[in-house]
Length: 449
Image (tube, rainbow, N blue to C red):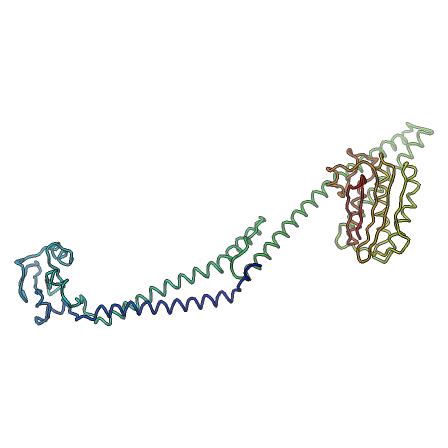
């Protein structure tokens, strides 16, 4: 079993706990940084800018002095012992003096003073070797330390927010984005399956439900398209099957009207017209039945019936036709009551269609076998089998589609082509199944109800 997924609530609580933990760690880190600065600042602190006004500053004792410059950067006043003979500075020299790495060997701390400048100058060797901490601003070191702590904490805080935001984005925003993209794709009529979310279990369930819905929509689209194709094909076939007998009726009626035939031939024409009219009526009746069966609102009347007795009655009605076709009929039907919930008229029509189909297309075999079986606690199984030529694989794919016939070429003498479609529709209305299988050298149609 896979690891149990956490819910959105658990994810949010975890995020809150993690954020609080990181916040505490950040605060501790900021305090440690500030504390280290305090420790570093435990040496005496001197400020070169303050030393410019305080000639008693220790900085004068380690070799420093103050120079006052006029607007032209000329030295006009000196405090302390001047260690060089410079009396004028360029801008470049002033900038260079502020760099401790300067090769001139001196560092200057410069500020504006009146119209000119004031600078405190000290040798780099003395500045680096002193046991004093040089503070280059007027702020108290503790205040500076607090500022550093605050800035450090703010940086850690912003980083923590970024980390938590990224965590929540991975757990919540990313699955939501995938779901939104899937919905947009479905609205466009596209097939969109969302990869299973690795986020909270609610999103996993939503994604799975969405994918199930998409698969069902795709299946419905395919079924709808297949049904539309089937209806189109059915209408084309119906047009063909009706057109042929009607053309014959029209032609023969014209011949009789114009008295082109007389006597026995005229009678034959009348019989042909009657047969063709009967065929058109059968087509109309079968089409009406098939359309009713395809209507989801059409309900059949189910009653408790004896399946064995219904099958025996239909077999008796077809017995003469079977014998005339040169076939033998074998029955395996129990004498006991085989209870099924069925619409008797429609159920008898299924058996009749299957027997008629077996007689019509079993031109190479010798027998038809009908059986009824019912095991305790299991569905009733009714089979109609014949030992004729096997139905081709190509025909099997559309065997229960409208206007499909067992012969390779369609012929107006081959029945309406709706028998098996009607039989399957009736059985499905009974919540049963109708299948074809080839086994033991027999073509078998199996009803499970």
